[in-house]
Length: 291
Image 1 (cartoon, rainbow, N blue to C red):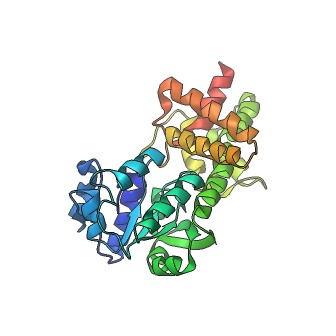
Image 2: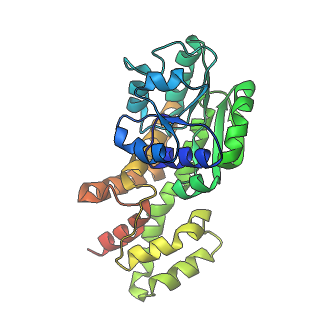
Image 3: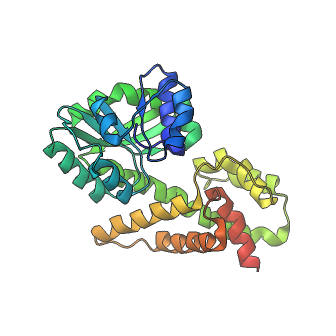
């Protein structure tokens, strides 16, 4: 596993608990220490990780990080990768994944893109949702591992298709946080207690699955409380929304709702809130609208 941030560490931890032998690497070695304590081996370089593993999972911040980790001097593709399977799990554009697939295959390796739906909690419990792009034989090779991580596995097309579907799924959730903030603005004068308000919204026909899971967190933020750990921060949402807009431009399409949601997340980040969990945005926006 290359990339042991919040999601990478949760995925690696889950696989370790399932009895998988894991070698991990991160540009910041400090982030590998909890996994080492749990039994993972730690590679000195990305190249060493690739050479010591048959299946290499990567979950990285963005396209720039992918480029550095795969193509750097001691990167994953620095040595002989013939026959190795690279499973790229980052949330980036389909163009990034297709380009990477071509480079991996040119070196004799196999490639699937496999971003996952869910945060650290579902990752730790093996309840992620996998969107896969790649060749059927390569997907079949990874499937036994994915079955230990995921509640549902969807092979949606060739390389890059997984990325497209993940951005599609994330768009539904991420614009919801903004719409929730606007809904709260409308009912703010009623002064309904946060817990009751979330109970009402969760019982309505338009309530998404994420609201059922995170209604308590939203209520806490409305009551002025903070919470930890952060599952998915505002700056990460901004990165994903930019990738969605890039994907749409490549298709000659517009995403006006996503564009406006990005502007609102950008505003929150400018106010120094980029590291806050995304569920704080409804409270931030409803308060901002009242200023």
